[in-house]
Image (cartoon, rainbow, N blue to C red):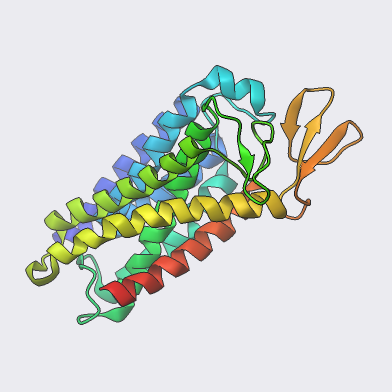
Length: 286
């Protein structure tokens, strides 16, 4: 009964504080702050480990967005001070995880579980999807925010030809390492918090395998995002603005891709596929 009453109240207070602070710091616009409140509340209210995973993704990504702001402003035609992510970006980067978390909550309530197919294949697969989701989101965001600051010119993932900074599908070694690091951090969070919230001594050490799995999910999700960006997302160079843009126009020379998906669509598909693959991997591993 105490958990039923206290955890949602604490979650609501923390979600409100985070949403207000993020709006004030320009990490989120007004719509993003509102939906951000709902997403953070849902995560923290039903599963602390999932809530912290979301916060690790959000706060690290927000901090990295502000690093090298001047350099990013020069190359990114859609650059916004602080990031100012809107509700669409919030939902596309957390919607799948929200659905999986609710399913886990409906099955086991507020209890936390380790990855163990002997106890529940379904819970293990659902947790695998959540790990894949945030490993991909974190890895891709870290790759984008750090990779663009690299002195090396990005290469298009489909042809390996050098392209301008800001081209969708462009990758650098620095960006790929950042993607792997982002996934690794998610894996570490899952394991470390799990030692506190989940009681499963028989398989506790085996949970460490989540760390390399999440690292691969972060790297693989970023590569998948880059491949989609290079093929089904348009990139062109505007001769007037002297920047890479995401829509064709009379003053825009095409660099790569076709105008089928925007950045949000590419993110959603890469997150979905990475979540599915990581879910399947968890069932086989655990």
